[in-house]
Length: 279
Image (cartoon, rainbow, N blue to C red):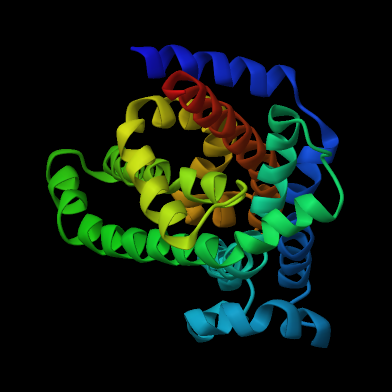
């Protein structure tokens, strides 16, 4: 019960204490994401093919042709986004966390010290992200060969699609909750690779319910947009303009930068409150 009370307090404080200097590292992830979506809208041009064609082409020949490219855009964007978060986000997310933690440990929010903590956290954050990604790939495979078939045997059509999507999203959030504290620990002074990874996973498991609660509290606006994109992409492409897929993905990308900021802000506070309780 103590973790749940601290989670509610952390959510409130993260929302109340929003600061642009802390949010900016999360926002920088938007730049390549939006450039990719812009390139996907201009796939018939050389720069559009260079910017998005190499990803969409990896999904098959239809990914390079209008309007089928927009049916596959969500999958292509997910692949590109995974690369961005792995190699760019593994520095920018710890940088944002270091800025969030700065007032708690009474250090400057910007400067070489903050950048140094983010740089030291890069390796373990990248490894944790890769492990998270591998687990999610395994879950996606299991979802299609198991729960998805069972759900569709009872609920056909759109109801089955919605329930399958909800189950997939809930498990994805559960996995993310376990890994959340790895970068939070990694930016602390004196943090080690093993201590950040092992200690972060242990903390994620120990605070699983409270962490999942705060993640879901902040994530629902982005999930509403993602549901429109991922459950029935053919409906968006055929009933409306295909280009609407890129617009919705851009909206989801913007929302996700705020979601990630608030989740890590609340998670950092929950971690800090836990440390104070143990002291």
